[in-house]
Length: 116
Image (cartoon, rainbow, N blue to C red):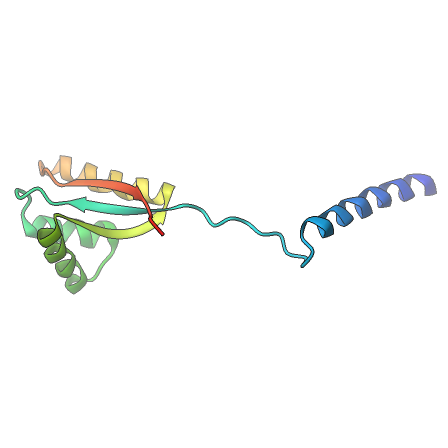
């Protein structure tokens, strides 16, 4: 029985030694997930009031921030509404797309990998 305990402990010790070799400072490092921008595209047909409601609902922004985004959208033909992990960005894009389709609006939304 002592031999089994020794073997088991030796297995743990060698795993710990391997960990120490791989991470000398004792910390395992994880790579940060890739981030994606959720971008609204201007179409010259969607009303500012509708865009305001989409931005406030889908991106949970205050009225003044949403108005600022609309002005940026109209000036630059696109605006980044937020930067998220891929899954969250896809969900936001789907929310905007579904909301626009349900309301017969041409507003388009895309996601793009964040450029660092």
